[in-house]
Image (cartoon, rainbow, N blue to C red; front, side, top):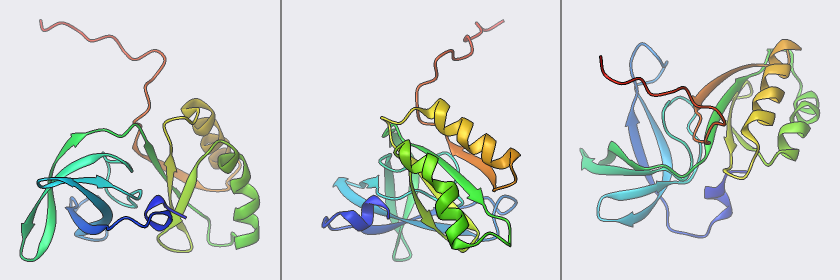
Length: 163
């Protein structure tokens, strides 16, 4: 269940244009909560769009009757991953394999039987989540991709001065 489903807030659909070489679809819609003039807080994790996560605040403008995202204003501290299940994975097997991620505070939403978006909230240990995702891939439970790591990292690479 995603946070959009948990909330009684008035939500709207906003749309992201997707790079044609990166996705089988041309745009993706997400639920969002209006928070100001042309500003919206994302309320679910994207399946295809990279570079955004739940709770990020984006700017969107109406275009042909749709709210199209024009930029990212602020980060919400969440991370997004997506997993792709093998064809033979049963629902029962996935629920069992999901337990370690659930215990770390992650939630998921399905696009299809095989494509799942994972929201990692700010209070989750991103390093433990990543270890579980890597182990699942190594054990051939799924393949995974990072949509956005919004968590602070322990040892970020140094910033190089301009030469």
